[in-house]
Image 1 (spheres, each protein chain N blue to C red):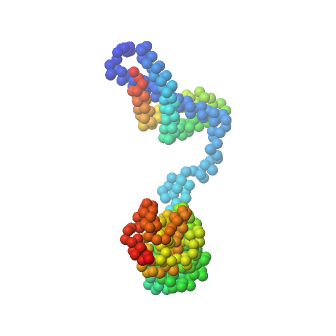
Image 2: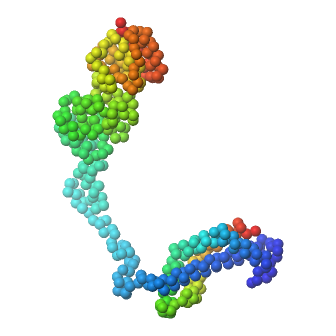
Image 3: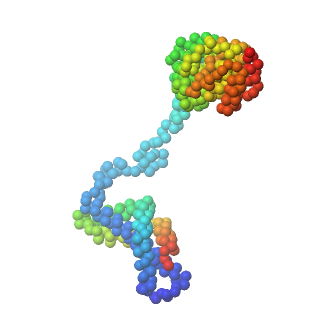
Length: 328
Length: 98
């Protein structure tokens, strides 16, 4: 059949279709040939019948195709319907649920709401010894437990009541401040950064100058843990607190110009108002040396402008003016 | 069916393109994979075993196998595989045939 040189779409398609089929046939034949070569080689090399053994063994390991059983003939959900009696609550629990049930029932696993129960118990009884023991258990088992959602009142209760736990707490100084007595906390805070991590609720054990946290955070932590009358961060130069003088505006001024904003206006105002600076914060010295100060008002003015330049949002005008009111 | 010169030339061009562009090899691989998945290969192997047992392990030749396997093999290709291959081939032709 002779084809036209300028074919119409119809015959053209037919031609293409025939071509497609021819190509297909070629591919199939190629696959068949490939198989023949493969088999022939296996036969001549002697490995074609390797997967066959004697009839007996063949029968033994035949593929099993029955319901309820896998291809080896083993039952795979044998223990699904078995029940066990819980030694604690005496209930019959399904086998696959037994382990999680025990966890909850005995109050021992990670998800057993044990701390929640403890908190309820301690809030009912407010018994120190009770919470002592359970705290230790908690710490030993739970990586992520955090009892510090307790309000600060409870915390101050623990600290102020001369907790007998203090002697034990040395073992548990792993950053959970809730188990530490006030002395431990204080001593920790003099050597360590102490900033409490948001997710683990542990105190940072790095140095006072740890780059992960700001001095602002460190101050806030000390405030939180030790109360407003807490000692301040020790400075590197070991400046004496005892020499802190009210009439002398110098320390106050040096406070105003610290690198990081350490004092909130209310704090400085309140501490000033109480005129009780013997146990107030030591002047903190940060990485930058404090600016040289002359006593008197003129320098104070310049200091204020300096501090505002450093963008101290907390230092607003009113508290500063109240400080000056007391100056001689 | 005798093809015209033009058509022969066209076919030659297409076949050349198929090979040079690697499409032929790709199609071969696809076909081999599909035939294995659908069990065609195992079926054919089983048939081979019969032929071998018949002709004798030592004496069986490639030709024996080819003669026995090819017609049966061609017939036993599942329709889905055939359709898939044809579809791909047509696609190629649509793109590369003038």
